[in-house]
Structures are given as structure tokens and as C-alpha cells.
Image (cartoon, rainbow, N blue to C red; front, top):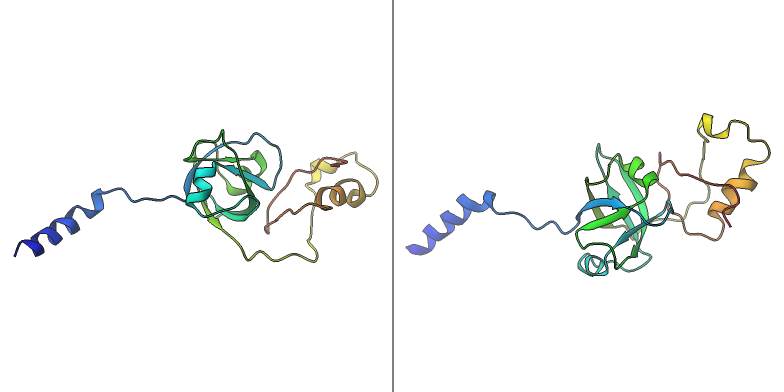
Length: 158
């Protein structure tokens, strides 16, 4: 008879217990300025079963998603993720907000993408934008991009 009473108490207090959400992390400022890289601690990467260079799907506010490469950073706390300013704006999050991280192993290689420059960013720039900016940015680099993402490109990346 005592067994059903114990089960009843568990159901009544279940809502009060905190759930373990290992993939929900606090946003922190990134140390590198790469638009396609986020940093996690090695302990958190082991917990989420991620390896260095894996592709991850980040979910932010307002159903915004972005795809990045994960790297380990021993100076990063276990419950935090280091994200670049450009990726934070794509996710619509600020420093201290919570993002969800999950592995995304099935990212396909794109044959072509459609890149539109923001109007005020190309003011006064002449010449071939592809050769000067985009080709060095994407050449010999694995850069996952998501539809409707913005990214910052500087001239002569390499």
C-alpha cells in the first residue's frame, strides 16, 4: 500500500524539480572573430557528444537558427558558449541570453549560394566584389551558412 502513495508524491512534486538541460547554454563574447565558429569547454563537448570541428545547430530567440562549427576552449566555463557578434545578431540574442545547441551532422555541401550585400556596406567600393571579398572568404574554408544569415567579410581574408 505504501508504494502507490510514494508514486503519488512524485507526481505532485515533479513540477518543482529542475530539469537537466545540458544543451541550453549562456552566451558569452567570443575571443576570435570568425563568423562560423563557436567555442565550448571540452567537458561540455564530451557531455553533448561533440567533437572538435563538428557542425552544430544553434537556436536563439524568435525561432532563429544558425549553423556553426564547434571548437574547444579550455578557458570557457562549462555552462557557457562563446559566440561571435555576427552570429549573435543572426540568432537575435545578447550576451547572457540562453541558446540551444544540438549536433547537426547532415549538413549538405552547397553548390551555390545567393549573397546580397547590404546597401550601405558597399558604398564607395568599386571592382569585382566576388574576387576581392567572397572568394577569399569561402575558398579553402569550411563555412556553414544558413538561409537569411548575415556575415561580415573583410577584403583579402587570406
